Length: 121
Image (cartoon, rainbow, N blue to C red; front, side, top):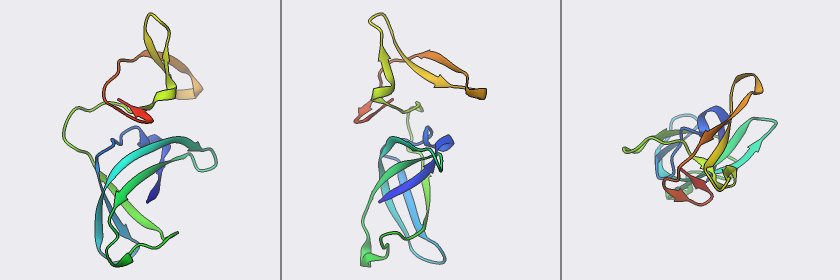
């Protein structure tokens, strides 16, 4: 399934994290795993799409259905996740451009961690 995640929260999500999905109203909670946060931002809603892999027992979830998703951080190293195409290799160093308040930007030196296409830590 695909969930829309607010842009401000997307950087906190990690591939492999547990996702708990519950349909609006009383219902069963279905657990799955976050497989990717897609790098495309919806400019109208300022959300990114998170791909969640889960089983759908009894076809409880239907296409277009509204659900509440809670992400549980997996234990381990905390690191920001960025799209690989956002990483700039200059030959001397590797950087990403970080947006700050008031539309200011600055360069941040970046070192590769775990890669899970198309995202990196």
